Amino acid sequence: MQRVKRFTSSDQFSVMRAWFVHLWTTSGLVFAFLALVAIAENNAARAVAMLAITMFIDGVDGPMARAWDVKRWASTFDGRRADDLIDYITYTFLPVYFAWQFEVITAPWIWVLPVVLMASLFGFSNDSAKTDDGFFTGFPSYWNGAVVYLFWLGMPIWANALLLLALCLMVFVPIKYISFNQTVQFRSLQRVLLVIWIVVITVMMARNFYNPDPVLLYISLLYPIFYMLASFYLSWATRND
Image 1: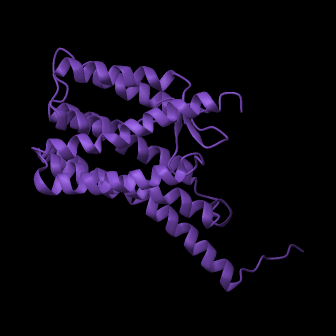
Image 2 (image 1 turned 120 degrees about the horizontal axis):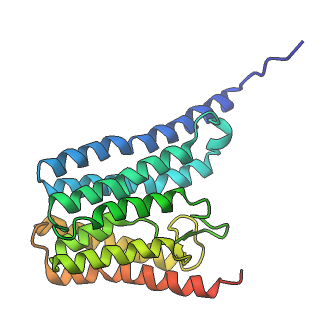
Image 3 (image 1 turned 90 degrees about the vertical axis):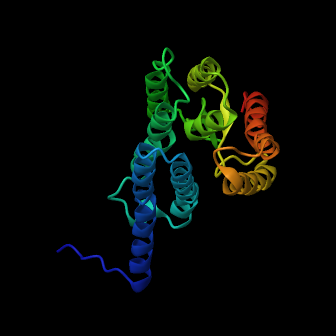
């Protein structure tokens, strides 16, 4: 006769906690929908705020899942797949819609936007998109950041298009990019710079989202520049690992 497995109160708490992580992950869809509505209503500031919340949710759900052993206690739900689906919506699809709605890209360069969608889908579907030593392989689809910066910088449309195309190509180039939660190298420095970046961006948006202070805007660019240069360096330094 087969024995029925009994759950202790501790086990039940672990199961509830694991399912809370999945609920936390899927809550990103709520703010993704609110971002969609904001874009449709031509409210760029609210759209970026909603996308920022989805980034926060995405930034903490991974460590929560690992710390609370979600794969063990809620094994019937594939949190990684759900996370990828939501990330494609929030990091790629909505930013592309944002670029179209707010004319970051216009004719005759509008064809660049579906190229971004397809290149990013390849990145999300690539089995080697994440390395064993804690990096992303190829540009990790940070289209939300790229598109919002292009919106703020007000460069010519052709320059915006060429930059997005360059990032599309970088999706396919096997360079290692830093993962905030998993890359060990430069972790402390990266987190300090990220906090500074968040503070600067918050102040800049609070003062005047549509006409940001140029000094704050260029200061905020230091973190993305650090991220790219540090990723290129670590990709070279760890190429034989």
